[in-house]
Image 1: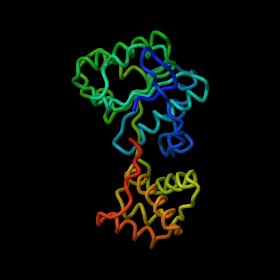
Image 2: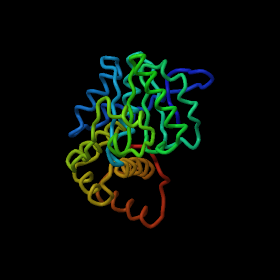
Image 3: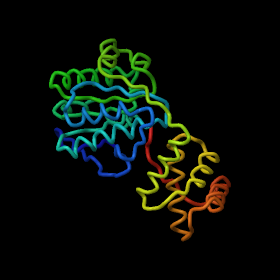
Image 4: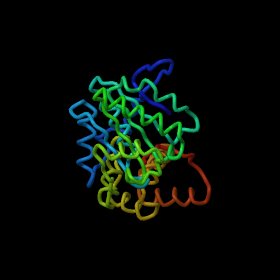
Length: 251
């Protein structure tokens, strides 16, 4: 999904108002500085390129979407471009986006080796820089290791601020789960949260997805969220039974 709060050319973008991707719901851990810099860029206090990199589950996509939301709430124009969907969109999509205050480009690794996409992103970068607008880019690797072929684009990725996002430790993961649970209007007891992170993969996308499943299942069964309830649900899921997925991109 391409999300924005403006209409550009013939392409109408709509930036979603989901409350799942706000800075308030992102527990920064060791990533506090990057959150502050993204907020500064979102409201126009700095005009630069901010490059985020880290493995899946560090919250790259969440932060880019939160930055766009922060910008729109401040009355500024922003767009989020997920290049993971680059096979569904054309490089021409990037034309005209330099009129926006902020552009967030996710999954830059996906365009590596595509001359058309690399050229389009280079031109967008240059136009945004000339207009003193900001761009935030996220990838899995450091800016000099993206696999980008175009030398000018590769060098520009290192011009601005670069942040290696760090995984949360278990204590912070529990805090993040409980914060998300409260946002969904239920409480996740400490012992249940600890049980959960020791029973499923500890990456945040899996944990958040499982939390959403637990919420849906407890509402359907009219049951309190306890360790026996969660144990039964996990056993049912592992055996291929109920609850369809409740997915959210959290890279």
